[in-house]
Image 1 (spheres, rainbow, N blue to C red):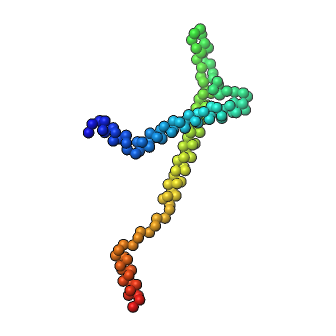
Image 2: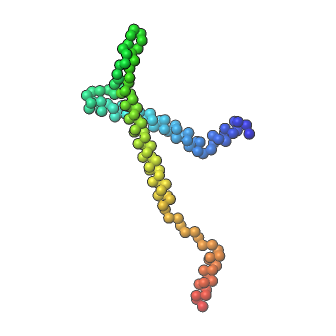
Length: 133
């Protein structure tokens, strides 16, 4: 089997395709959460803290000299990234929790009793005939 055929067989398995779809949707979801934190959540928080823009919070470690840029520690961006992570982790947790509860409900649903075998049906008929005599 050539390497190309082997790769095609690998790529066309269902779980690989599902994983690829999940990664693509996850990337898009990450952008949505980042925008939510940066554009919707952080401006009111910054306003409550005294007109602070979190993206501009930093500590200057070394001032700019000539054409050399200043060295800064941008902790505001770090705070935004941590909030992105917390919101995404919570969303994934809620999704997994919902999936687990649906799976648990499926497992708890009582299964219908199996239909009697042909032998059992015949024995039941014989029993009923003998009762009626």
